[in-house]
Length: 293
Image 1 (cartoon, rainbow, N blue to C red):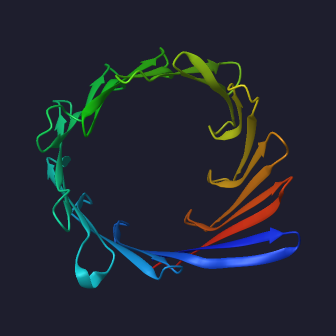
Image 2: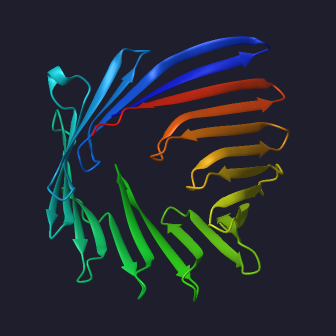
């Protein structure tokens, strides 16, 4: 069982105010490690939300329901149907039945998901995917329907000979266009990402990796005329967990995140330490974990 509590300590000119714990979460698991129930409680408004999960024999999720008060039944419920161990349908139910809906998943002969479609009077599928010979998704179409119309979004991805993603583009029928370019330098373990909107460069992010493939430094420059930039550095343990994350913003503001993990790889404490010209603050989140055998 996991129990998570959030608390906040705000240090302003030497006056420490303690807020919390004001939120608590608990989760229980079955023998396969799947969540069977999650409870979310907010001490500020004395409310609680329960999420109950049930599974099929091989771990596939069969049903998930959320209730705000167990005495009054479910508020939301989702049922899942499978065929040959592939998810084929999601059925969403609400307590008042006004927003009930269904999603169907369509596969090809290679068991790749080709389409995702809402059922209930909609003319177009909600999503369609196209793959290349290496089973990368190279084209995707989304349909977003709203009262009075719909918007089509078309995505396209391009890969190089090493099967690395080098470009992503998206076009929406409302005129919004985005493009992301990925550049690699074989002389060093790094990558540069350039993001465009409607033809204009918005931001550039450079990543530097260690020999294990972990990002140890990233630098983002925003090309919106404000000359903003952010530098983030990471420190890892031997298992690849992030122990420390430092974010430096232009102007001198620094946010440092410290994480502490147990031997199972679950974090026990997270501390956010923020310092800047206007003052400093610290937020602490503890997670109490009890393991059952």
